[in-house]
Image 1 (spheres, rainbow, N blue to C red):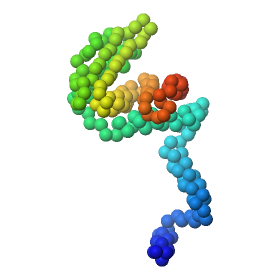
Image 2: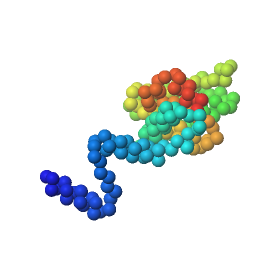
Image 3: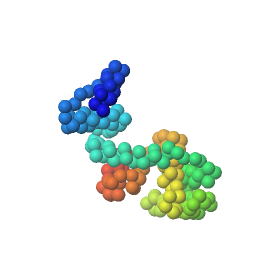
Image 4: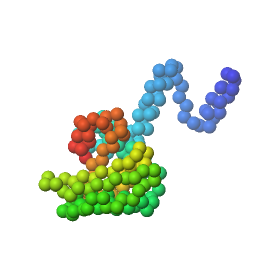
Length: 184
């Protein structure tokens, strides 16, 4: 067994691959931690974060972004989801302008669940409400995440504040949400 391990080590060294020798398991653990931090810094550089953002808030933003990307990775557009996108586009544009929209605009049923759609006209304070609901697992998060991606690509100058409850341990906390809004 020791001879086979020695032969494997020799093959690795002869191939020119980088080799490090550790005297203790703690030394090895520290090297792994340093390498992992280096990879994380390369994938999520801190220079992309506003200066007033602390590490915890930055991680929270990353969790929300990862949540959205996960649902955008595999998404098949259908005529039903396209109709939902059109309704969401109309709602988003209406929230910018004084457009009144009738409630229950004939939103199609998505597979495995019906989706309820409600838009209320602007209230005196300038707010409106859209409710997209359905059974667990029917694709609400996937539809919203993909629509957000679609809408922000079409409207790059529109500020979109997204907050996905359940994307992290802190996402349920109102203070986390408020920090998220302030950072955006």
